[in-house]
Image (cartoon, rainbow, N blue to C red; front, side):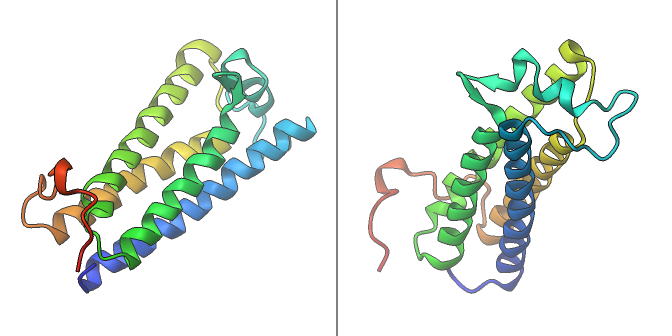
Length: 163
């Protein structure tokens, strides 16, 4: 990737946010596996144990925290590829799609907390906030790097080697 200081800084900030979200998902997975729910608030509308033991805590038979761990590992990998690989498609296509996927899944899970479970988990909300921050950082990075927001979406040339 061409040296663009602002884009590099935004991508580095995205790595920090992704690491925070990864640790958050890892902690949620630990709580699920150990059955030991230590939440910070755990009163009123904040009931982590209720949220994480509800039937909605699994997606395709797998606890959503494991999906979060996997997602953030992939996302961190994509961020490093965008920073250190000369192929511009990591930033132009893969990162925006991945961040949109993460935001969509976070909206889905948060709406389940609001409308079905009627309780919140502060760690789940932290993950949702990280998803919002990540899509903003990625889209700003893309806009600053390319002249057009829709640049480099030529699927036929996506995997050509950059010289």
